[in-house]
Amino acid sequence: MNIPFAGASQVPETADVPRFGRNLEVLVSRSPDGFLFVDGDGRVESANDAFCRLIDAGQEGLLGLPIEAVESRLRACATPDTPWPALEELEPWKPKTTDAAASDSLMQESRDRQWLALCTPSEIILERRRLQISESPVGACVFIFRDVTQEAQVSRTKSDFVSAAAHEIRTPLSTVLGFSELLHSGQLSQEEISEFAGLIHRHATELTHLLDELLDLSRIEASGVRAFEYRRTALGPFIEFLLAGYGNNAQRQRIHVANACARDIEILADKEKLMQALRNILHNALKYSPPESPVEMDLSMVEQNGKTLVQFRVSDQGIGIAESDLQRIFVPFSRGANTRHLPGTGLGLSLARDIIRNHGGEVSLDSTLGKGTTVTVQLPAAPPPGSGQPVRRDSTPQR
Ligand SMILES: Nc1ncnc2c1ncn2[C@@H]1O[C@H](COP(=O)(O)OP(=O)(O)OP(=O)(O)O)[C@@H](O)[C@H]1O
Ligand SMILES: [Mg+2]
Image (cartoon, rainbow, N blue to C red; front, side):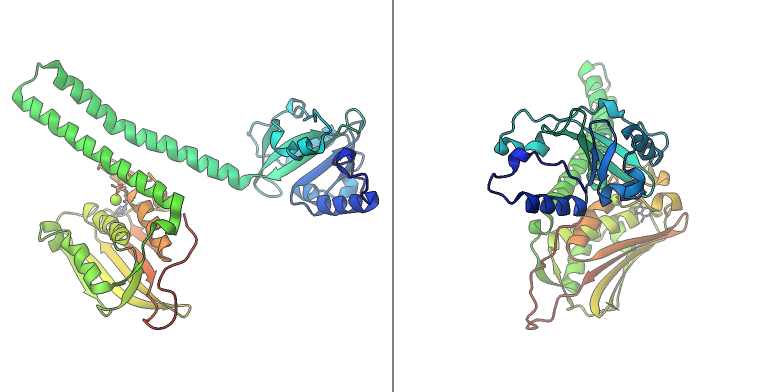
């Protein structure tokens, strides 16, 4: 492969030039990024394997092709209906200096890049840059293609999250604003004043709840397991503490606990956070089922792949979740179509899942519309004391 890459100015005078060229050739040919070298006449001089894979073509088929023909083949791999940036708009990056130190920052400084969405041979987002090489003939250049699918997804998820959060905040906020303006007008009866003040209070409380959950989510995302303090926690007292939060009220009367495992079985838990996760799940079961109907909480031990897991199962006989909503139910702000008339942020389950995953566990949800829902949480049991296994959890942050 003839590689007119990396200005000769970067090769030290004392260097073994053929060896340097060979190293460079290996580097480019093995690069996960696609490289397409175009000569001064605008024809393909060479392409590395990664580029050929991108458009499902062989090296030979590409050599000598005009760049416009390659562009058409690339375009044919694109997702229909997505805007395709014109190649001419991709201004080449021209080095201002041949100084080697300055050339080191060449990649970062290149401002002109395009994102291309391809659907065949695989669904990916590519970033395309064009590099002009100072010593090469006029018009000769290199195109570099990098798979940025993951970056694109992260950025899309973030912007979806921000716009959903803004939307969720705006609704209670405009209610607070509207009713406070009415109160300010001073022309209301005592009854209206107390009704509107009550509404303001309710929506402000909802806002606080939403912001608390948002903060919790972002804290967990930012620091992962580092934000957790794991301690040996006996299951029996943990569940008692969880239920004690309900006092002896009507909600508590509906919760039936079936305990099929020993009270003293231990898990490694950040008690407060795990409590928050289970409370969110239990709260959903109570909230999305009729006021009189029972909620079963079933505790057991299961063996999976040689590991002992503690299983919490919360079942209700409530409104259930439509199949079309199930897939996204753990995504922040997702709510079932049948619960939109009820207050809620759609953050409780995603927060619970983040917490449970950071405990090394998993949560799943089964539901039938109109019949009921079962949420299953599995957490690893703590290693027996004196087994020599670490007491602190040590896993990577999860999302
Ligand atoms: N036990 C359940 N029965 C029926 N639907 C449920 C149940 N649990 C969750 N859901 C559905 O999943 C959605 C998301 O639940 P999640 O707990 O994340 O948010 P939320 O309950 O709407 O609000 P909050 O953040 O205040 O908990 C709910 O809006 C509801 O549609
Ligand atoms: Mg909830």
